[in-house]
Image 1 (cartoon, rainbow, N blue to C red):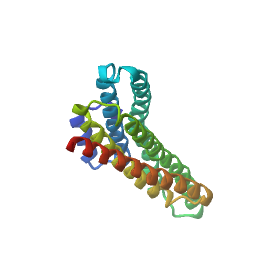
Image 2: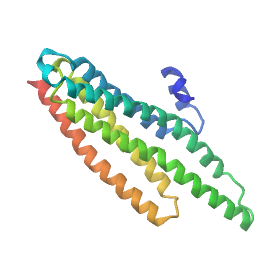
Image 3: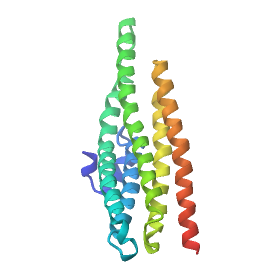
Image 4: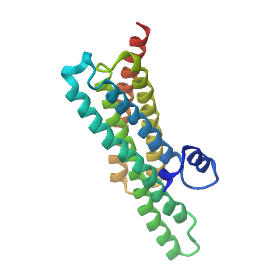
Amino acid sequence: MLTELSCRDFAKELASKKPVPGGGGAAAMVAALGTALNTMVANFSYGKKKFIDIKYKHEELIKRGEILRIKLIDLVNKDAEYFEPLSKAYVMPSNTEEEKRLKNETLQKCLIAACSAPMETLEFSYDAIILHKEIADISSKNIISDVGVGVQFLKAALNSAYLNVLINLNSIDDENYVKMQKEKAERLVDTGEKIADEVYEKVVTILKE
């Protein structure tokens, strides 16, 4: 289980000449960290005199953030579980027509499975960016910088997951599936980036006041 490794060992595994973990797992981990920063800000802001009337909102953000963080951490392992069969499928023999057919069938199944993990990372990263948008105006100024850090992590994870979606889609034969996933991914990235940039600029403006 990759998520059971220490930070030092995870980075060492990521740097090694192994198929997993790779960019997909790293993107999910970064997204989990970005989400965790949102929950930290909500925890520190919860119950403060300035925000006492909206403590229910902080409670809600904490609950939503915890759910997303756990899902994203799970995706670190899920990405590896789906990619390993794909890496094996690529080296299947293809000397005869039957071997070629079997290899292609296996590859197509593995590619669709492998595409699902970064697509979920992309979706959850977008959802976590929304959390940062919601907390930007209801967090203490002395911790607002962590909203900016968190949303930048999530923007990076959003774009990183998108790359992993694309690299799998490029080899999938099902045109309808490819079209649907590309449109969905592009919509999330375009909107998510804009929101992330708005939140980041708001944080910078507050810190410069």
